[in-house]
Structure formats: structure tokens, C-alpha cells
Length: 486
Ligand code: FAD
Ligand code: MLT
Ligand code: ZN
Image 1: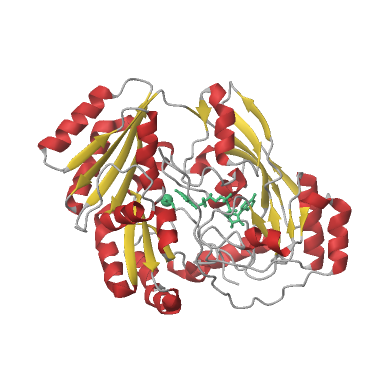
Image 2 (image 1 turned 45 degrees about the vertical axis):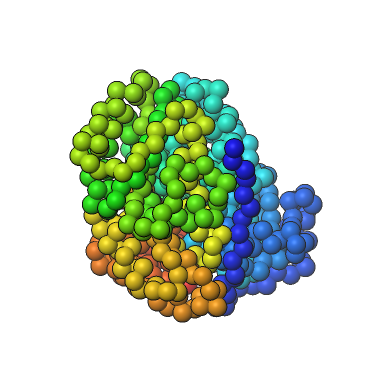
């Protein structure tokens, strides 16, 4: 069966200095020691490494202090103190973010929420789970199993990302096509503001039209407006039946037709609709040979893959059969594998969920998480591939069911990092902006794309965003340099 893998190491990217950062003093440490337990304070350089380095090992800060409070009150005291001393601070959950948002740019203090990991309760009648922000997504789902419920969000990082991070990024993931945006399932939040004020926006009710819905401002704000400490989430019922089909086609035009047929036949049973090109599939096959693969990877780069999951409370055989027949009659697929049990379903998903890891293992990855018309998916991939030339390999994959493409360019020679960056940025984002796509579909802007926000928002909108930031964080202590350029 499958074995586990280790994470790869790629080189660090240095950032230019950011002005007006106060430096941590002994008296600051003294204060933090007076309000926190010793195990909630990390100063040991070897222990700090994981807080300073992102999942891709691409963004690296040099914080000298990570704080891991276990109550909202402690978070409040930390922020109040940092605000009074102009000490900058970076909220961090599972540190699986892919845009450099969760690690310091310089020596900001890291505020890890991982010790706030209590499940506070589940209301069976309302289907609402209340949790602290540091709960790992998977562990909430383990807890919900006995109620036959789940959090309406699923992503490859579910074993390590925290719910606070998921909310702060408004994460998308592989079930978006079924559940819609995560923000729609967040009924309430507790947020600590940079001033230290604990803002109680908690709620378990679904319908509430009483003035501005302030919690929405914090959802997707990537830790720049407040620290999310608690959440009330509307759960979904687990599906009784699930079936995955993994298929291969010999042209992208056929992928579009497959996409349409799947949506037509699956209807409300559509649970996921994902896409990979041969470059992505090949990279997984090459880098993670231990994974169980449905088809041998080929040297013919004109192959494309679609993974779909159908789910529901009734048996799915007849829908799957009709769908397969339609695909076959229209000569759209070369091969198709159908999961026959839970283990096979998991194996098929592992291929798709591990593209990111496989790419990171192969070299330094330049990631572009974009939304655009699905008709243009392969066209933009080919353009980027041509532009990168022999400097790297371009992989195309993503959530085709909701129009979200992941363009990953693997730079083989780390010495050519700068050259590659100049070739790709802002080129890729400008191309997407020109066709009215989104330069960040689900990962956020972080530090990678903050400087390109003008490609996504007009001047007035950016100015309003700055003013909103000023209301909540007048001293710019919270995650400076992220989302909105400094
Ligand atoms: P972190 O990485 O720790 O932080 C992310 C951002 O949120 C940072 O800006 C941070 O400052 C802020 N933040 C964290 N916690 C808080 C808090 N409590 N209060 C305020 N701000 C906070 N993303 C998707 O959208 N869809 C996917 O399909 C997907 N798949 C992934 C697969 C893999 C293998 C990996 C490594 C990542 C994937 N991601 C995906 C990206 C990432 O997992 C998500 O962005 C996730 O929501 C981040 O959660 P986290 O707890 O790791 O947050
Ligand atoms: C995915 O869909 O696999 C994630 O968003 C991670 C990535 O973009 O690589
Ligand atoms: Zn994704």
C-alpha cells in the first residue's frame, strides 16, 4: 500500500527591508513571560525555524520569537502590548499557506494559534460546530464523524491546516463545486483586534440582516485586520455513497466536453471536478512512485486527466453508468478507472492532492492560482510554458469545476531563480488580468501578490481597503506587507 512522504527543501527568497519595525527588547520578553507559560514562548533558534519557514521552503523570515497562547484573553494581552510598542506580529495557523502570508518578512513576532485547539461544542439540531481557531481541519472532521457531519471544506492540506487559517484565507479546495465559498458557512467569529479588543461576532443563526456583516471583512483578510480566535461553522451531512472516476483524454477540447457531460449527468450529486495535464500527472508519477496510479505516465504531453467525484444519499451506480456510456459514445475518453471501494477512492484522490508536493520536491516552484474561463485553461498554460522555455517545466491542474487553474512553473536550476521570476512576474498575472480573470482564486495575495493588487482592484478600491486597514490597525502591526503593499 501507500507509504508516507517527506517534504522537500527549496531555497529561500530574501525580502527587501520594511521600514518602521521596532526591534524586540529584553523588556518585551519579560512582559510576555509575565502573561504566558514557558511552553507558550519559543525563542530557541532551532525551534523557531518552522515558524519562520513556509510549507514550500520558499519564504523565510527571521523572527526571534514565536508566541503560542491558549486563550483569547492572552491573544488580547499580546496584541495590546505589541500595539503600544509598535511591535509587528504575524498570525499563523498550520503554516500551509502558499503565498508567503503566514511567515514574517523580517523579524516580526509569530503568533501561533495552534494551542487554541479546543472543539467547543456541536449543536446537533442546528448542525453548527464551535471551535477555537487552532483546530486542525481534519481533527474537527474526526470529531464530527459520530454525528455523520463534516466541515464543508476539503483540501490537500487538511491534516495540518487550521480552521482559523482556512477562514483567514477563505480557502477554496476540492469541494467548492459542491459547497460554494467557505465564507457562506461561517456563521460567527470571535476576533481579537490589534488594539486588544475582543470583538464578539459569534452566532449560530443563519439568517441575520441586522446591519453590516462585519465578520465577512475578516474572512479572507489573511491576518491583516484581526486575529480570528473562535468560529461557529455550519456543517454538512456526510454523503452515504461516493464514487470517483479518473479518466484520460487525448485533447483539451475533449476535457471541456467531459466537463460539460459530467455536470449534466451528475447534477446535484457532483462533489468534485478536477483536472490535470500530462506535465502534472507525469511529475506526480516521477516524484512519488509509491502512489498507486491508474495509468502509466506517458511521454506524449498531449494527454489530459479529469477526476470527478459523485456523492449522495442514494446509490450512484445508475448515474455513473449513464455518464460512462455518454462519455464512451461520444468517444471522449481513452481510459477510465472507477473506484470500487473507499481505499481505491482514496488512492485516486492522492494523485490529484499530491501535485503540489511532487512539484515542490522537483525544484523551486513559482505558483499562480488563478480563475478564468475554463476554455482558456490550456491556452494560458501553453503561453506560460513557451515563455519559461527550457528554464523549467509548467504544470497545469486545478479545480476545473469552478474555473480555478493552478499554474506551477518548476525552476530546475535554483541559480536561475531571479531570471525565472522576471520572466514570469508580472507577465502571468497581467495575462490573467487582461482577460478579466482573478490573479488569486483561493490562496490569497500574501506577500507574493500584494505588489500586484493593482492588477485586481482599481485605485479607489485599493484606497478604501487601505482605509479599512487603518480603522482596524492604525499602527500597521498586524501582518505588515501582506495583501496591501506597504
Ligand atoms: P497559515 O498558512 O498559517 O496562514 C495563512 C494566512 O492566514 C496568513 O496570512 C496568516 O497570517 C493568516 N492566519 C492564519 N491563522 C489566522 C488566524 N487565526 N487569524 C487571522 N489570520 C490568520 N488552499 C486552498 O484554498 N485550496 C486548496 O485546495 C489548497 N490545497 C492545498 C494543498 C496543499 C498540499 C498545501 C500545502 C496547501 C494548500 N492550500 C490550499 C493552501 C492552504 O492550505 C490554505 O490557504 C489554508 O487555508 C491555510 O491554512 P493554515 O492554517 O495553514 O494557515
Ligand atoms: C491544490 O489545489 O492542489 C492546491 O490549491 C495547492 C496548489 O495550488 O498546489
Ligand atoms: Zn487548489
